[in-house]
Structures are given as structure tokens and as C-alpha cells.
Amino acid sequence: MPDAFRELPPGIRPRTMMARGGHLRSQYMETAEAIYMSSGYVYRTAEEAESAFAHEGSRFVYSRYANPTVSMFEERLRLLEGAEGCSATASGMAAVFAALASQVKAGDRVVASRALFNSCNYIITQILPRYGVVTELVDGADLAAWQRALAPGVKAVFCESPANPTLELVDLAAVAELTHRAGGVFVVDNVFATPLLQRPMQLGADIVVYSATKHIDGQGRSLGGAVLGGEKFMRETLRPFLRHTGPALSPFNAWLLLKGIETLPLRVEAMSRSAAEVAAFLERQAKVMRVLYPGLESHPQHGLARRQMSGGGSLLALSVTGGKAGAFRLQNALKLIEISNNLGDSKSLITHPATTTHHRFKSEERDALGIDDGLVRLSVGLEDPADLIADLDQALQAV
Image 1 (spheres, rainbow, N blue to C red):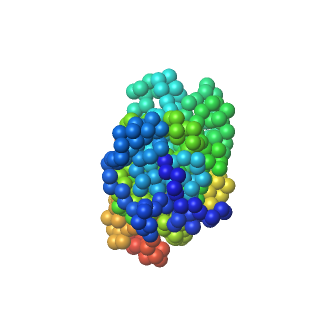
Image 2: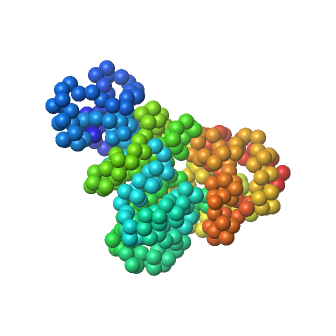
Image 3: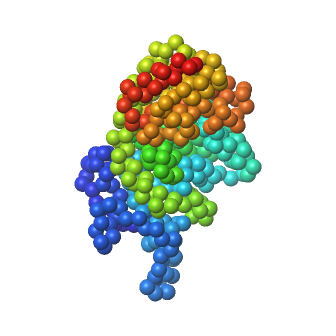
């Protein structure tokens, strides 16, 4: 929207970009980004109002369409991702729905990986079919399954990689090639990896979505989401959909997310280092049957993780003995790590997917996804890893 973003020197590095990118200063030349808490904007003349609507995007007209603070967040994330365009949404699920619903119609096919967050699964299996969209789920780790599903042609393909909660990976470059060969658009939910540890567009993805609520805010303060993609898709397909359906991001939330991006590399780097230490500790414990973390050599797709990710991330999953009872005893015995279904936070959080984030799934569906009753998902925060390990060590005694 605006053409007055502060110019950055060429070749600027990501950490500098996250602190400086997308700054739109007012006439007051403020240091921090301004919060424009305005729903609408005024015009000096009726002719100016007419021109603003005739030349769409030439200026701010209504904050459901665009807002200066929201535009700054979009521009900063766009620069970080290396995308042509970015549109913010009120939540991560609004971003996922808009990325898919904006481009499909009755009779179109959508293929997605089976390992999905509960709400993503609901969009694919329940909402889109109500409007005549044909959907199919496949084993995301099986390229032959992707090839069979995409052979008849496809409009859109969707996956999470790493997936929630089992950290299953999808070979993004291979699925991108299969999608394009089938005439489709490849949409990747990159929330677990963040744009710092994985760049889906560099691997062939057309659209990337985020729940900015997670690592981008990273401090449990704000909901938010974002869709990034090519300028043509953003201009002709996504933005009209967002404009007329209204999942607009609050300017205040956009400001919080801008502040979150400034410290994103510091947080993700520290959290990922700690997660690797915690995962290595858990792998040695007798009451832990398995640990799922892309940075561990024991992860079934560790080789793929090394090819398409620059780090293991801050999320891991572990299965403890004793099933649901064992998982509950572990959670209830923790003194530092807290029980919450959120993730990517500066505080370490743990949840039991079978009874929280994936409770809607039938038991046989959870079994197929590897979500056993003893599985818990751990989001590692900014605490000292030695303290987290000590907390898990004492809690495991209760299992």
C-alpha cells in the first residue's frame, strides 16, 4: 500500500532487517513504530475521496482494507520471508482458511497431508467440502502417495512441515514439483520452523502461511496471522477475499507483532539450542519410549530435516510409559514447565494432544498419525535448559 517505507541499504542481513525493515514514519519522526488505532480516514475534498476509491490502493481508506501499522508488519515479514507480497490476518487459522478458500470453488480438488493441526484438518475435511470442493488426505511422508493423489490434477495442495504435534516432515521441494506438474498451487504452513529455520518458497512453495501468535509474537500477548505469496496472487485473489470477508488484524496486535519480529532471531536461536539439549536428555530416559525432534539423528526424517531446515526448532514431542495416565502424571508433576496448548512462547509449555489440540480426532485417526495416549508436545522457551531438564527429570519420577 504505502510507497514511503524507509529504504534499507542493499544486501542487508536478516537480523538487521527484522529490527529495521518496513518502518513507516509519520511527520513526527518517531523512533518506534506508531500505533494507528483508527478504523477510518478522512479526505480533504469529495474529489479526493472519489480518487481514493477509483485508484484502489493509492491511500488508506478503511482499516479493514489496510492500516499503516498493519502495513508495517506486513512489509517487515515480507522482507524476512523474501516474498513478493504479504497480507496479515486476525489469526493463524484465518490465514490458512483465506489462503485456501480464496482460490477454490465447487468442483476443485484440494490435497493435503494427513498430519495436520485439528483446525486445519477441520477446514480441509469439513468446511471446504460443504462448498463442493473435493478434498483428499495423504501420508505426507510418502511421495508415492502424493504422486497418486495429484495424478488427476489439483487446484491447491496444503501441508504443515514440521507437522503438529508429531514433527513429521514433508519433502517440500518434491511435493512442490508434483503440485506444479498437476497444475496446482502449493501452500505450506511454516509455523513450527519459522522463516528463520526454513524457507518454503526457496523450495518451490507458492504460498506460505503463519500463525504469528506463535514465535513471531512469542510472548503470549497477541493473536495474528499472515499469508505470503506472489504479487499476482495477492492482488487478484487473496486481497479481494480478505477485503470483503474481513479477517483484519488489529493495529495494536500488529504493533505487538512488529516488536516480536525484532527479537525473533535471538529467541528462536536460543530456544532451538535448548530444545536440542532437552531432546537429547529425554532420549536417554527409561520412561520415555520415543522422542520426536528433527534435530535428533533418531528422527525418522533427520536427513530430510538437514536438507530443508537450518535447525531443529523449538518444538519436540515425547511418548512416556503408562499411556494417558503417565502423560497426565508427567504434566501434573512439573513445577516450572506449564500446561498450555499454545506454542512458540518465551515460556516453556506442554500439552497432551490426544485430549487437547487433537481431541476431535477418532482414536484410529490419532493412531495413524502417531499420536498415542502417552504423547505430549513440548514447546521449549527461553529458560535455562538445565532448569528445564531438572524439571523434566523430577517429573518423570511420577510416571
